[in-house]
Length: 437
Image 1 (cartoon, helix red, strand yellow):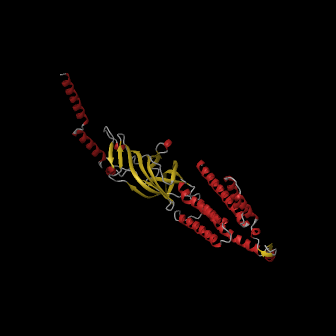
Image 2 (cartoon, one colour):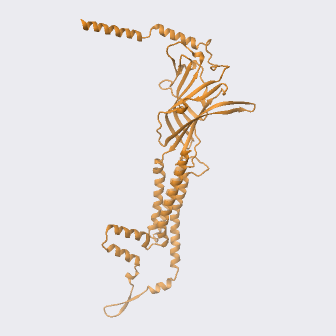
Image 3 (tube, one colour):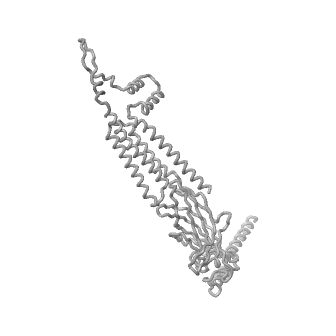
């Protein structure tokens, strides 16, 4: 009996809640009548702004960035996907409903909407899949919120002097097209939070470093007809990541330069080998330089990557020019007292078994002292460290190579190392100073 009573009680309570939660036909009818009266032409003229012939209408702006697209150097622009929201008060839309009125994008033309536009936009798209991605919210006190999702491509004047070690700043500029500041004024919402919320800042080539917003009054018009308009700027600062540049630019360039130095260890008589190596490295670095010209715009100033390419090209070309100097130096030495040397080295008398002497070339004496020392070091019983030390000593100091080759083996690597230290320190200082500003 007690269980039956509880079941009946809970069923009655649930039925009562269901009836209370279910909208009655009267509630639909009252809301419809209120909206008809609110948007009727006799009561509401959407051609006139709120506070017509009165104080300027204050419109507050904020944005939520869904994600950033590409920053394109060739086209000088960047892409961004945002939720764009505008807030203002329209006293003609005060209503007595218990909840705010929500209108989808297809009904937004029932009320007056601001003609806000982005000044530096190239292209923009409103999302409408599967439905129009916008809405209008009208509170009981006439406070209106218009929210829409927009994907836009905006102009961005890139400064490529430090490319690819650069930092870029791109902005979005918005204002009213028809209404000067005496009619409509704009402000950023939540000045402490800059009025912009980042939902996703991951990018392929850049890292978002900073966001700045500001407001200014700009004069527009012609002679005799000038008006002030409110400008709102949203500035995004991006720092380029170096991973792609290291893999695709700097590492191949350094390897090509190192490859060109191998000719210093090739015998000076191996003309085809040294010439082929020099020409190949020169053509390779020229091709590498040309491949990256197509990825950046044609500008009238020198970029950081141009400096690195040009200096590296000089080192590669210098290795080819060094072989020319080696040949000239060798030929000059051979034009010396060649006759006296040939007479002294012609014959050396040696005794035979019958007691007579016969002329014979002394092959062992023809060996240079450096070769004897190297062979002696190889035949000796020394450890691996000692052998490595002797090999490095022979390769850089005691080989029979030309003095020009031996000097180049040390001079070229040291000079290129100094250049790299100066290059990276210089652009690191510039980057750090830019971040402080």
